Image (cartoon, rainbow, N blue to C red; front, side):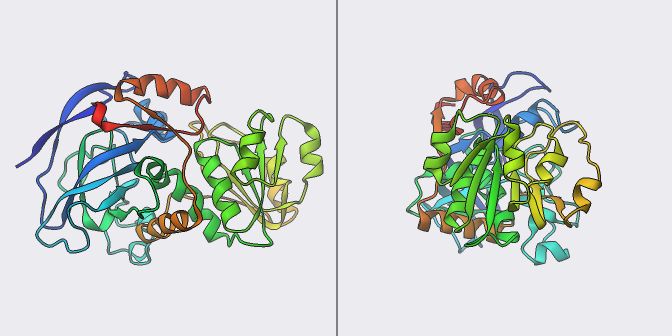
Amino acid sequence: MTTTIAAYAAPAAKAPLERTTIERRAVGEHDVLIDIAFVGICHSDIHQVREGWGTAIFPMVPGHEITGTVAEVGSRVTTYQVGDRVGVGCMVDSCRACENCKAGLEQYCTGGGPVWTYNAVGRDGLPTYGGYAQQVVVDRDFVVRIPDALPLDVAAPLLCAGITTYSPLRHWHTGPGTKVAVIGLGGLGHMGVQLAHALGAEVTVLSQSLRKQDDGLRLGADHYRATSDPATFADLAGSFDLILNTVSAPLDFAAYLSLLRTDGTLVNLGLPEDPVQLTLQSLNGNRRSLSTSGIGGIAETQEMLDFCAARGVAAEIELIRADQINDAYERVLAGDVRYRFVIDPATI
């Protein structure tokens, strides 16, 4: 039997989100029912509600930065019990049989792709609904444990913004002796700075202006440079082992690639809605690489949460009511948030 719960949904593309009700599936033998305590607003929520990345499924309940407590477990669930502090990120299922899934890279599932937390179709053939709601039912294998040292509100953005920056930092071997630049100090960027610093790297923020310099240095950056100043690119040429691009706006890739050392990599985490231009000459000089990275697997997400708890890393948030979601979307687009909006589902 399904359960009817309150949620906030976009009824159509580009339409304002509004309060509604949705049906959650009954708790199966492998499922966990979670009372949602907090859910973050990610820029990708806005992209998908507005069909910036292509045709979407409506009505859409966004939200893939979910924290809460276990309310019920299925008969075969032994890893969680009622009352446990848990989280759910960007995906709720995968084929579990392909090479990538077996390697803990469920985000790169080749057996049909991962099932995203919202704007996707689950194995039951029904659309998935995300965390802008009071409860969610998730397979136990796609639930992670929130360490006691992390408050649930500031932990919520770690389920996307945290793992999206942690995964490439780990993959490209960030640590003492490495130099990392983070383009943009927003929802992703402020996590990238903290994590790169905690991993031992020398960190530079590259931002259009110095408006957020004090915040960047407080969060762990060693240097903060304005990209609107041409001297920045001259001074920093050939400096970095890794650059994390956290913005979704088009960039002058040749200029930013020139900042890489030999064998350095620029990793795009923000995905512009429009095609980007690139000349191969900007890669050729020093065997530089341009790459992307998509979230992380379930085991790596748990590793990230444990790392954040041990190192005191968390998101900086602004807690809002559900009826402020549409205003929050506009503020995200205007860059008017420091640094992640988090919704209190008790207000739905």
